[in-house]
Amino acid sequence: MIVLSIIFLLAQLSPLVLFIVFYKRINKIIELRVIFLYVLISLISDFLLGVFKSNASLIISAFAICEYAFFSAFFFLCIQNKKFKTLIVVISALNLSIALFLFYSQKINFDFWAALVTAILIVIYSIFFFYEQVNSPQALIIYQSYIFWIVVGCIIYLSGTLFLFLYTSDVKDRQNSSLWIINVAFEIVKNVCFSIAFIIARNDNRNIATQNFNDTNIFEKPFWK
Image (cartoon, rainbow, N blue to C red):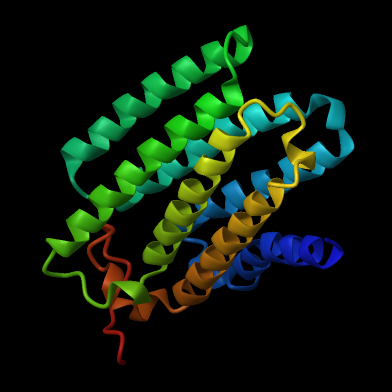
């Protein structure tokens, strides 16, 4: 467990360190700023969980709201279809309003509800993102895109942890459950994907796979130059 905890911590710190190291090259990419803030909030929430164990449910619930907000903002920036972007805004406003109401009322198991809704909606956004890229004549070698790795990280993490939350929905002290190691494993995979994204993004001016992701057309040079 000690080794796994060290790997988990290094995986969490890796995207933050890479963003700082490559800051001059990638700081203008808004999508990466969103992911950087998300990883930072995630790290802070884990620290608070370790310090304020008696308020674990409150911290997890607050982070669940932030998690959906950051991921939906990321997909809003990446997806080009204006109608779907509007749909994301409407769904997000509705979802966050309901989430805040349930969070304060505590009428249901908020952790379970938030994990379920976040996973379903973000996976739907991811599917539409890939559909948009498949039908885009400009999308080439998509795995060389930093956005691709972030989306893959989101899908793997949310899909994997969703079943964990479903299975442990009645467990009060979920963090001390023997099954929580599954969450740690998916967290590591997610942060590794995010780290790969930051490494790829440092050469953003050569990345042809994401030319169509931003109307400002940040990527000006072909990948092979």
